[in-house]
Length: 338
Picture (cartoon, rainbow, N blue to C red):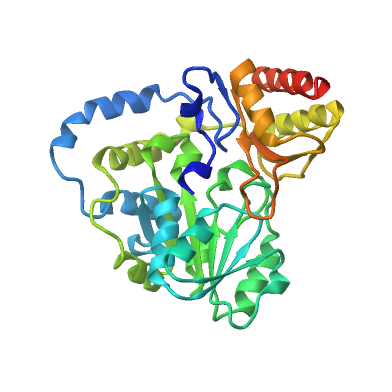
């Protein structure tokens, strides 16, 4: 669904000044990374490693895993498609509503796709279970103990758990070390989200080495480019530059949620992260999105194309208090004129 994701500011030219549409926190300082990549520009004259071994070893050391238990990809999206390709033609269940690429990847590779809304809907015939945790677009985190019990109960099912937004919640999640101990779990991680570098496309999988060996056989060479590898290595070394006060960000999310509820005419879904799903009682999300973009320079995510949602849903990711206040005022104007 290439045209169905957020962060489509390109459609509005130079009008967008505040971006709520992508689930990243935009206020990080990339000056050190820019300088580092400038110094590495000569590297574009040569091919990168056929597979990003150096970055995989660095991640493995940080996560207390072996390098064979880490697989770096061109964003978490490449990982999704590689998994679907490796296990082509299987029965896949997807916990909905969620990120569309799981279903798209599965259908591309001949899976029989079953949307589910609870773990109770799993059957003995399910061979892959796709879970976004924290979930996109709702921000909800599955209870860790419940998830582990499900993994241990359905031993013939492979659980693909996308933890791309793990940095933005205080709820307990499976660690990479815990996941690698299971024969039927793959965790997806996103450096894109953690470090707010979506243009670099950096993700990785953690799992036991047997699972990752099967997936690596499907990977094309040089899928992760030289500058992305250099950026990933830098980011791991300079993580403190990208520290975000998550408790404070979540507190601001709660304030933003309450202010939106005071406007009326909408329902704000509960979220365990800094982003949230909102349902309009009247009007279409696409109309609100266009108004905010054209009149206020603000971009939100029209969430109507998530399976299980409709034209009244949109999603936003909390930003600074000043930017959040501008969003509130602009939505007030649109709502009161409706």
